[in-house]
Amino acid sequence: MFSGSSADKARKLSVLVGTDVTVSCLFNKLSKLVDWSTLTIEWNMVDKHAEKNIVYTFEDGSVHVYRDGSVVDKMGLLQSNASLQLHNVTVGDEGLYTCRIITPVVYTETTSLEVLARPSLSLPERAAVTEGEEKTIQCDITGFYPEKLDVTWYFQNGSRTVHAGVSHLSRVCTEMAVHNSDGTYSIRSGITLHSSAVKDGEMCIICQVEHRTYTRPHNRSVILTVQAPSQPLYNAVTLIAVTSAISLLLVTSVIGGTLLLYMYFCKAPPSVSEISQSGIIYAQVASELKCTIQGARQREIRVKWFKLRSGADSVVESESIPLMVSEDLSEEACLHSDGKHHTSVLTVCLAVTEDLNKYQCVVLCRGKTFIRETTVRVKGE
Image (cartoon, rainbow, N blue to C red; front, top):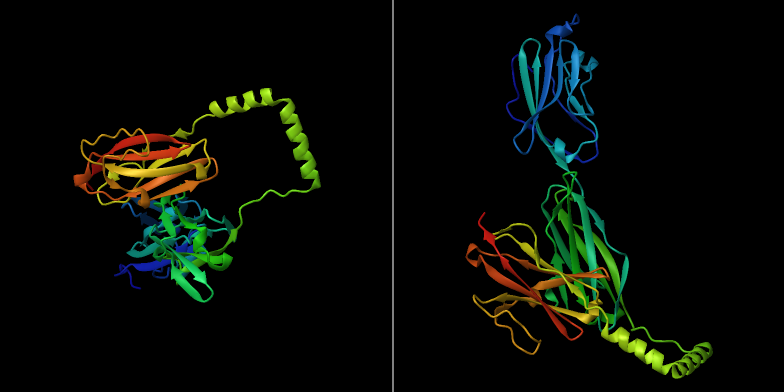
């Protein structure tokens, strides 16, 4: 390198989050009798938002560190090496780095630093579905960067692998990525399938992730088995206990009957939330409408989604009366449950012309119908 020169093209450097990296900067060697007061070093960084940040300076023999953990080896300067060492790299360190050396001749060099974070996958090793029922398996993918990531589900029987989307007995629901406080992203994807989809009582289900940090798709799998419905087991002790319980009920039939009737008629109805939206809904961007049900078991509820006609009557008195709607979207929704809270999620991708359309969530539970309705505003990009 010659005095007064600068790098014609920025170098590119990639590094994983949490590791250390050295951004190179080499210049003309100094004479043995160095006067540090004549040497100036400036390290600047332009981030992905085009904002300029000072990282490190050396001037008049004094060091100023603006990014914690950044170091330039002072003895290395005698070997024309002003490389910048960054410890414990974060997503915020991504950007275009420029070193400016004044000896007093000016020299500059630029390096593009790309920061990557490899996803972490969480999936149970084994799961069971009760015969005749459905089971939802969730794949949690956390701490990845950049945001672009693809999730695909597969079924594997022996040596045969089939895409989960080809089966009418299963459905996949993948949420939008969430931005974490450290700059990385997280996402959840779930697959719901009926027990009849599991052949020979056991099936291997694969969650496959493709990301910039993987040279090839990364897989995690779960073994799903079918279990029979729980049946009461009777033995001599149980028979004696049942006989005693029946005798006690006969003696206290009036009091017991009154208590049972009270408990039946005063059972609290389930709670159904209003329809919530995932922030501002932009045209041609996938968004979610959510409705949460509490106070009921999952097998007691059934959720339907409708897109209403303009001016349609949205009052529904019972399940037998047809809804005045233009489209039934129930098949496009998926239900997430943690045992106490059941959230029905409808993913929509709307055009500007669909502004002010009404959507209706209808929850059927214990012979009762609960209706929640919302008007969706669509904003152009």
